Image (cartoon, rainbow, N blue to C red; front, side):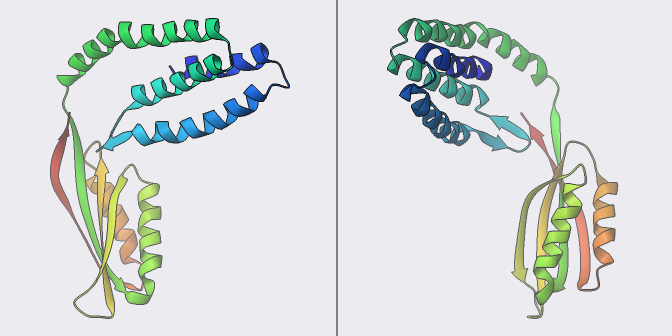
Length: 196
């Protein structure tokens, strides 16, 4: 669908001519539709939903630009393509979804807690994020709170992985303990979440 939409947008240039105001308006429509498409994308755990909806919005914008520019035949052909993809490929997508449902995927979660001196909170957070970025883990959230002693900050992070990653989490925490201003580091595995 994304390629159909892109093709429809590109089709406007030869149809309308090089000096057409329609091409300039289409550029603004493309920019605005990008924000709309991004708004319908949803992330749950490690899965992303709404890709079909976003690409259909993209195609609808291209069809609207063609229609608004007076190229009704091209808009009608584009509409047929988009409807065909959404109607006829849906059974195939549902079959693939049923086939993959039998294979359960797990998301393994880990919690890391580190205690650092207050003045080093930003440095400690940046180092933690850097270490996670170069690992196979993904950062789910990070939060900071003042520790029991006012001179310390407690930073907690939740990490996710597609498979057990105890050794990678241990490597991250081991590296954090080398920092002089980090006075304590601990981690634990959280119960695995099943992704549907």
